[in-house]
Length: 307
Image (cartoon, rainbow, N blue to C red):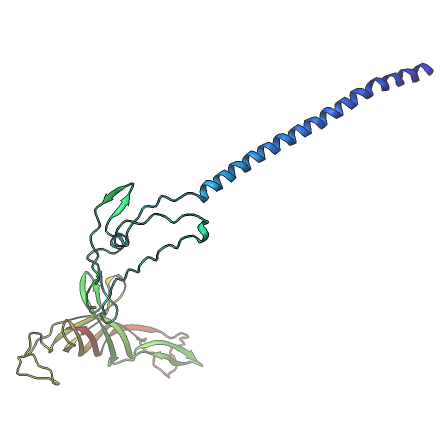
């Protein structure tokens, strides 16, 4: 037993220096890694400081583009402006560019070099011919009367009112209340937008109408036939009208106030079905209100705005 203790003591004595040496080697490696990482970070910081220093003292290489060329690129030389309301003078105003103040105390970046004279563009030391001058005032075209097309044909646009004078009332909706037919929505009078076309005859200059005469180069009033239609889907005409129109020019140009009177034909007017009458009970045990469509006529008043 004593011999076993002696062997263990001898092994412990021999292993202790090796363990101490291994611990010192681990500490040394960790310190060397920390020193290498510190040097790497210091090198990166030195590079960033160098870039910041070069950026603070750098002058950007600007390409000078005059305001005139910029406006010429955005607004064509022959620009046309069509106002929605009455025409007004439209001018192009180019504000002056304020000078760049010098840095206080001489600290900070120096101002960029002066731009070349207006009319030339400096690119890499070369001078490019100036862009065409933009006119100070843009050409203005007076507003024209609204137009529309139907079936490839150009029409004017008019506002109309129609009053149904057919043999039956135009019914939009009806319901059955206690077995009695009650009309919920009757639509004999309708205001609608219609497409129209007209031709106005201008009487001689010795014929006056409401103080208007045709003695000048532009005739002030006239009258003639018109035709109007209400378009539907897929080139289907829902209503068509015709009649006599009177036109009164407003100043010079094609603007006018026209008023037409005529008749309108609705080929698909919705009315109560055969045997169904308003405020009457349904017959033959029916439980639903029936409708049908038929052609009906009405009076038409139409207003348009081009001579």
